[in-house]
Image: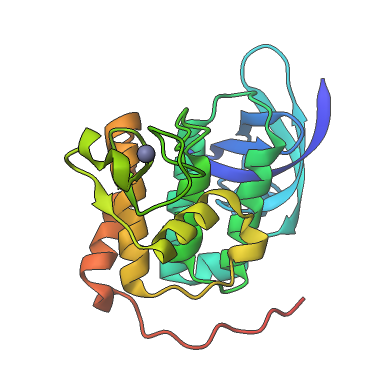
Length: 261
Ligand SMILES: [Zn+2]
């Protein structure tokens, strides 16, 4: 059966001398993996469509076993992401996270839109570190974790001082602080920010400018939830951690180039 689907390349793997195996998150049919014959040859018409992060329309033959990619048209090749080391690093982290948390054929327009919005925002020059954080918070429910962020996770109160609890995975009000000795106290501004990260679409928050310390705080919280609850080890994370420790690895930043669309 042949189908034309819109999708984004999540992963590519060389296969043999000339082929690639590509994993694509499609809008219509969820995640699928297909053989792209000859795609490793630079002259192949499949070469440009089988690059990481490419958003395009893919003609796929599916049936028993692995499908095959017959043709493709890039809609947006996400060029800026590929040309910028920091953007590439965070975008790699995002696609790996989404790849690991989704099953083949699991249809979800929400996840596709999240990925598209995130890559699009990074490609447009928004802070890739912040965008990756938004994705981490928004993917928690996909990982089976539903943090309680609209009220106290223990008594349901919406008033008072709040803290974040890894034990309850959510907020605790000051009346309930005693049930978790390891709470992380948060300010009202941080509480609001956590809610925003978890619930507001990237198209509305992608342009937020966040202080490095704010990002570090938000990252610490969400990473600890993933580490304790999901136990996910992502390959792309060690490079990001290295970037965090030694920002001098990055070339000095120029102003993001204007989009030429
Ligand atoms: Zn409470």
